[in-house]
Length: 485
Image 1 (cartoon, rainbow, N blue to C red):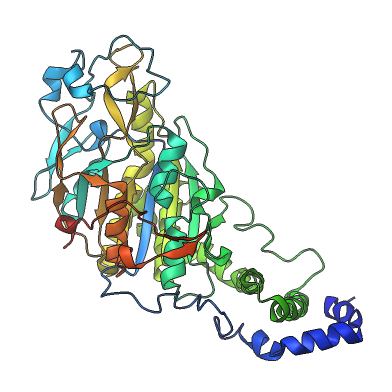
Image 2: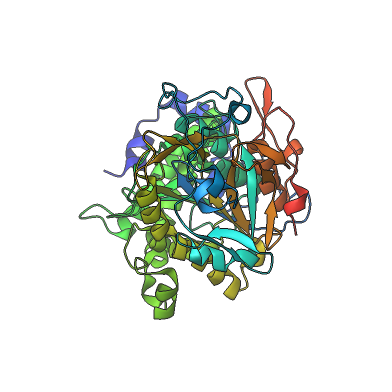
């Protein structure tokens, strides 16, 4: 039986009068075609709560390539020729400075330094050092990127560190960066979610990823990230059940929408509006998602550009092509998690495999966006939750050493969207252990990303439990202006 008929037949005189007193039901249902029409909070999913940015944007969308597990900055970007002379010596206490250690190395009695086992070379007009054995393709785009070498975080374990960089705090339950941007700026594409997450798995040791990393936290739940699966249905229950066609589904959604709208008119719970809008989004995604994931219109040279895994669903290369296609369709925030960077042992072999997965696709994404004239207003961000120590974890040998977590300094790179091209920011000591110039805290990093999107991080907050919450927290944060174009 039609659920609307069940709902209607269940109405008695008292409930009818009660519902009538709430009023404006028909107008409320019309808000499906005009999102935000009845939202008391002014949270318009098209424009976002800000209505418009605080100032001119240099980026309209973000693609965040997140390497989960802590990629070794020493072996990838923060190279110093002096490290060759440091190989094998004990890390001086004057450098370690009593740093808190993880449980995996707290019992070590010796901390021998180990230099990178790979070759580096200078790339681009700036002469940027990049590992030429592991990242030759990323090295080839050195003139397009800024490498920040002085990111730092207080977190030394994966879960708090990845929570920190994604939500601005080590505490659970806060809104992710993508949710903040969806809430503030909305999306120009109402046929796809404004915040999409894709996950690929490398060939190293993987840390767990939790859905709270793309959660909306205390923000309205319509702004949470939508995870696209690598196999089967991209989103669970997106397809119609057996025996249900598109016309049946439309009638069902209309009926359920009317019931939900009646309830919203009664109690004014914004989460009911979220439910209505998400049902409608799911219906539209039945058409938009298959079209998005149909790569048959991509020419062969694009697959060649992104590398041998570009046609394999679930790989990092495949997800990078999807990311570009989503950017073309106006999706404002995408996060591509690539797992497998937790290299406490056998680092030389494992990091080589990880870099084989990401080197060509990441550089191809930047080239592809530039070729289409989109890099100028697309911000590409690439890195993980922390770096790795110069000292060896476990026995030091030529090809089996590992490195422990290191949050005092690590490297990330950014491109496009108003970011300075061909630049290195900050300086660490010869051990790549401590920052000696231009530190960039996680809060500063997030403030800078918001700035590229035209948002003043100090003026962008959400009142929750008596506090004005911000992505950058309550401690001081500043925009890193030196990395801006």
